[in-house]
Structures are given as structure tokens and as C-alpha cells.
Length: 117
Image (cartoon, rainbow, N blue to C red; front, side):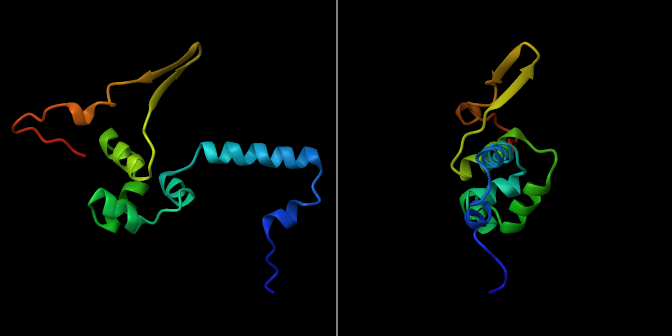
């Protein structure tokens, strides 16, 4: 055996308080993650996403590394993972969901204009 043990075995002897802290940390870590980690957590490969998005695998890799991208591209990526994208502005006195981007597919394309999707 290579010294690997299941996580449940490692945490079996933790106190209830420690198990609670670990569970809270897991929830916090799952709440924020880069796109590549999100894809992995959803158990999808770059190749699978590329097929759904109708691009090649290197395009998915490049998208996952970008710090700045079109909202439409991010939305398509999230939808390819089975989710929906919501954009929320947070202020000291509350949060507001921005709806400008929810109906991008419903807008008619203008001739000569180019939409990046």
C-alpha cells in the first residue's frame, strides 16, 4: 500500500467540533473557485466542454486562464456545465442581481454587428 487512506478514515477520530469546522471550510471552498476547478468539481473534462461549446479543447483551456472575458462567453461556459450565470452587485446595504445579461440570446442580431458568444 502506498500510504494513502480515504479521507473519512483520516477524519474518523476528529472531535465533533473539528468535524464541524472542516465541514464549514469545505462549504466555503466550494463557494469560490476558479473556472478550471469548477469544471473539475462538476466532473467534466475540457474535451467534453469543448464539444458542448463547439470549440476545440485548447480554446477551453485558454478561457479558463483568462482574467477578463465577455459575459456571454462566461455564461455559455457555465451553461455547458449545467448551471446558470447570475451577476450580483454587492453593496454595504444589500445586493442587487443585474439582469442586463439574462436575455442576450433573445436580442435580435443587427446586420453587420458581431456578437461574441
